Length: 83
Image 1 (cartoon, rainbow, N blue to C red):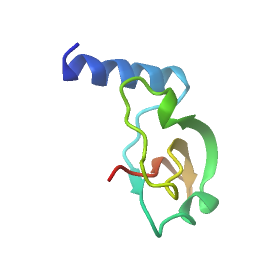
Image 2 (image 1 turned 180 degrees about the horizontal axis):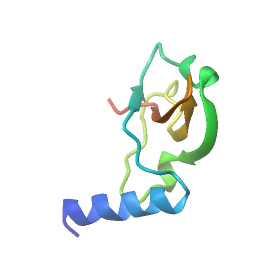
Image 3 (image 1 turned 60 degrees about the vertical axis):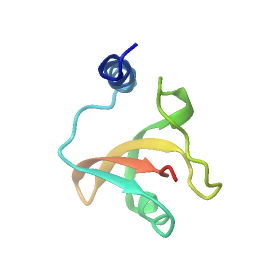
């Protein structure tokens, strides 16, 4: 399977969980752990459940894709990143 096919499969999985496309996204790493507390989370998906998606290797990085609103703005938040 080529990278474009893997990306499409991952995207379809995320959309099947009810997470729509958004104009705003955040990638959180160390030091940004408090941001999800301000987020009104509607959907939460573990990175490990997303096909072809890598998982964080740092223990303090949660490894979740969050969808919700932050100050009234729809947003996708990647809670944890790769090193």
